[in-house]
Image (cartoon, protein in one colour):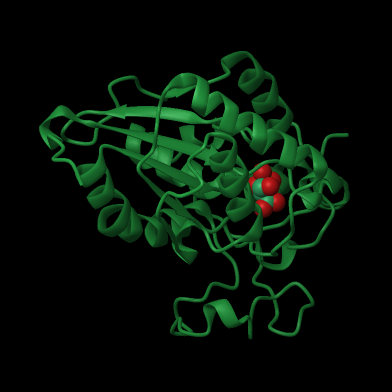
Amino acid sequence: MADVDTRAGSTLVLLRHGESEWNAKNLFTGWVDVDLSDKGREEARRGGQLLAESGIAPAAVHTSVLRRAIRTSEIALHEAGLHWLPVRRSWRLNERHYGALQGKDKAQTLAEFGEEQFMLWRRSFDVPPPPIADDDEFSQSGDARYAALPSELLPRTECLKDVVERMLPYWYDAIVPDLRATGTVLVAAHGNSLRALVKHLDGISDEAIAGLNIPTGIPLVYRLDADLKPTTPGGEYLDPDTAAAAIEAVKNQGKK
Ligand SMILES: O=C(O)[C@@H](CO)OP(=O)(O)O
C-alpha cells in the first residue's frame, strides 16, 4: 500500500442504502433484514455513478450486516468499477433497532399515538421505543449473525443515543485506522446509524440532531482534517438538489 500522509487529512464517503422494500411500504424497519426495492437498486447504481463522476475513489469499505446496505455498496461499487475493494462489516453500523415498532406501519403508528409520541420515537435523542419481545416475528433473537454477541450487547430496542454508543467503538477502531492508512473510505449504512456518525463528526447537539435527515442512495462526502474534523461542516452531497428533495421526504414519512 502506498504511504499516505495522514497529516494531510482524509475523505469519508457516507452512503445510506437505496430505498428498501419496507421504506417503500412505509414500515418501521430497524434490524429487520429487508432487501432493496427496484427503485433502491436504481438509487444505488446512481450513487455509484456519482462517485465515479466525482473522481473520489475509496480504498476501503465498511458496511452494516444488513442486506440493504450490503447490496447498495455492491451495486454502487460495481458501477464505479471498485467492486474489488476490501470490505468489512459490523453490526455496529446497523440501523437503529426500532424495538416493538419493527414491522409497524408509520402512518398507522402516527394516527394511533399522535404526532408528539411518533416523533419522540422517530427522532428524539434518548427515548427508545418499547422493546421487542423475543418471540415477535420481527425479533432478531436467534439470528445466526448475532450469535457471537453477548446477550447484553444485543439490543431489543434503541434510541439514537444507544446507536452513538455502540457505533463509536467501530468508528475509532476500524474506520479511523482505514482513513489514516488509505486516505479515502466508504461507509454504507443506514439513516439512523449515519445520523449518529454525522452527529459525532459535526458535533451536533442532542436537540439539533432531531432535525437532521439523510436521504437514500446519495453519497455524502466529508473532507476531514488531520484531527478528523470536517473541513466543511455537514459535508457535501454529490447531488445536492436531489438530496434536498429527498431529505424533505424522509422528514415527512408517516404523514401521508
Ligand atoms: O424504519 C427505519 O428503520 C428508519 C429508516 O428507514 O426509519 P426512520 O427514518 O423513521 O427512523
